[in-house]
Length: 90
Image (cartoon, rainbow, N blue to C red):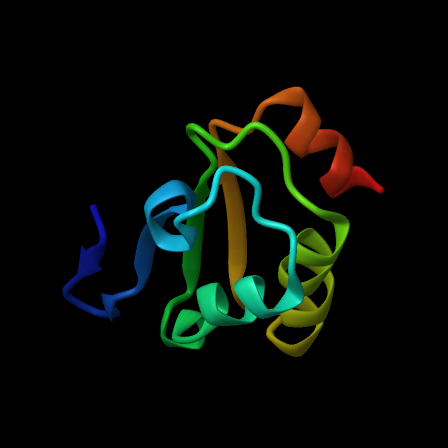
């Protein structure tokens, strides 16, 4: 699922709850720590299971700042509730 003979490890899945150790990730620094190493993959799936809400700075750092620096990397969202999705859309 995460490996290809041609591309090696090209995909990863990150559970936000166990990576951030907070039910409410809010800061840019949390997002930067989370994103460290993302550039080694072509596709990243962020699993928001157990996360009730997120801060705008956290989301902006991942989906704007990081994504603008690495447009070739696809970032997918999994198990995001409506609160998380609404912050992401802002």
